[in-house]
Image 1 (cartoon, rainbow, N blue to C red):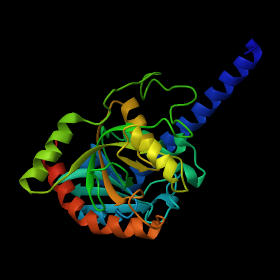
Image 2 (image 1 turned 180 degrees about the vertical axis):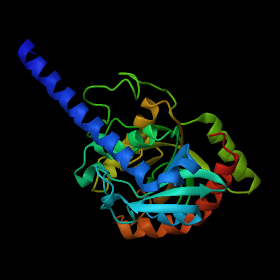
Image 3 (image 1 turned 180 degrees about the horizontal axis):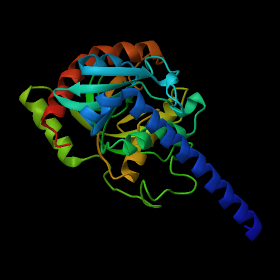
Length: 296
C-alpha cells in the first residue's frame, strides 16, 4: 500500500476511533445522570445480556430502574423479535447488576463495533463481568430441544465483521488480545456444580456465530458439526471478543431452541421464542443462584 494511502487510512481510523470513543463517553455520562444516585448506590460489577425470548428473566430484578435503548444517546437499539430493547439497573439475589433485555445483531445493519459499544460504556461505569445468553440451534448429537448449554468456547471465524477492527484504544485493552478459553472455567464449574445439586442435566458445548438473518442450510450445518460446533446462533461472539479485550470474566449460556438437523420442517423465529420462553423459567432460577454464589 502506498505511503500516502496508508496515512489517509490511518487518519480515517483515528477519526472513527475518536468519534466512537466520544459517543461512548457521552452515553456513559447520560446513564450516570439518568440513574443518578441509584447507580452511585448500586455500583454494578456485572452485566447480563438476555437473548431471543429470554426477556422475562428481567422480571427477577429488584430495586430496579430502566430505560428503553432508543432513548439512550448512541446506544444501539434492537429490532429483532423477542428482544425488548430495555436497559435495567437493579439487584438479582441482592447483587447489583445491569441487565440488557435484548441485543442488536449484525443482520440489523449495525457494525460489530456499534453492537458492542454498550460493553465499552459499562466498562467506563465500572463493570468487569459478563453473563451472556442466547437462543441457539443445537447440531451436536447430544443436544435436544430445550437443553441448556454452557458455552465452553466459541468459533467466530464465520462472522462478517470484528468489533476490534480499526485503530485500537489502549484504555480498553491491547491491540492483539487473546484467550484460548474466553469463558471463565471456574464459573463453568460452579454452574455445573449447582445444576448437579438441583438434579438438572446441563450440557457443555462450542458455540459458533453465523451472520444471519437466514437460517443455515443442511450442508452448512453438517460442515459446522464436523468441525466441532455444538450450537449455532447470530450473536454472543462479538460481545465475548470485546469482553476479552477488556479483560472481563465471562459466562456464556445457550438455550437450544431448535435442532435443525433433526426437524422435518424449517426453523421459524416464533418456535425459537416459544422454546426460549419455556426453558427460560429454569434458566432464570439457575442464574439467580449463580449470581448469588459467583465472585464478582
